[in-house]
Image: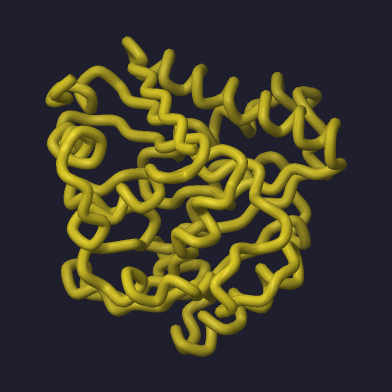
Length: 250
């Protein structure tokens, strides 16, 4: 059973505030109920404002930050000090300022061989969450919150249209060469992401409006619009600003 909620924030600050409240409330509930909070962080530029807000001093006591495990949902296959590295971005904006222990962070790539790092990443997920990658089942322990962005071509994480993730449906992590960006990417797959307790899409900007409308209101075709594969998760929130919501058809 899929439950989708679409929220439209009237301003950028409202968008950040709503995203922060969702993050903190899910973290508190997970830590209270299960003793830890497993969150997947999105890369790219859109979530940076949220991460910087979460690193602000007034949120020091908002939750037990030592009980949070941060996972990267996808990664560019570059060294971690490269400007394109998602891990570098989240470290600069959130993990570093908040003083997060590196042991609390599960990355995907450090710029090595993509195929080898694919296996290493699956092993890391299996060690953290339990289960057997490749057997067609999701991890034994579901993720608590997954943060995702949306590309103008309908991709999310590094699930790009027409690539191998769409038929490697039993794997947990997939490495693909993404021709449109000219680089290798590692990505966690829909099998893992859709098993999360909550998925939160973070989308801003008029340049995303057509993709938002296609993903939410158009025909279902996950090969063409990969974000639709994650929109099928049990609990999904789309947090949009008004420009991103501007071409919705309902």
